[in-house]
Image (cartoon, rainbow, N blue to C red):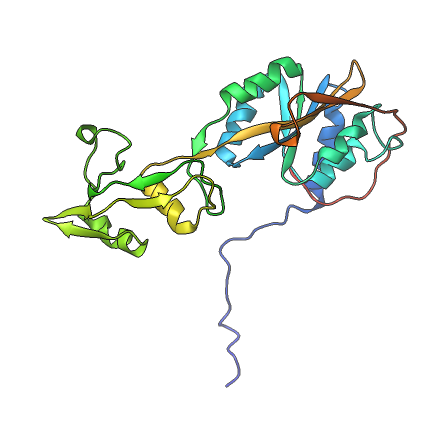
Length: 262
């Protein structure tokens, strides 16, 4: 039989593409901010969580503006060469815009902003699959409690018996004894430095273990008064401190680029 014309799929929701309009807006907003702020920082994020980044935005709202979009769009706005940069030496920031990264336009000097980010915006959250374990976590033998020995048992409560099948599916050799979930011997959930799997992250979350530390790492910054770019050196790169880069400016140019967002 021919297909009935009445049998049509009607979508109740419609999602519009962001399109080039948002890309142009990101480009224009960055270009607009360049003459308004004396410092521009390139930053990356460890253990990215949207809610934590929103807290950073809110905290710096009074004297700074944050953009976290596509690196190619932000790089195009800063200029990829002295001939396309809107201000002398600002294109020296472009090589540091790679991978998930963002820009902070601020009135705060590096001596104020960097310690502030390091001391006030490093919350812990639950690790995700593929992350590295920062500690060794074990489940003690005997009756299992919701925090598995992280706090005194007098302040803890036993795990509900309904969780026993889930624990067994995750590879934990538990058994029910008079309605209580027990372990005959200590069980290692993860060791420090190993890559976590989905089962391990599920267990860590069940027992309230947070080990993923959110961090905003500044890679480099540009200073208007000196016209120089300081590159931040991490411990893994051969020591701390900063390295100075200088360059010469040129004419402004507008080219093609991909979509991005603020």
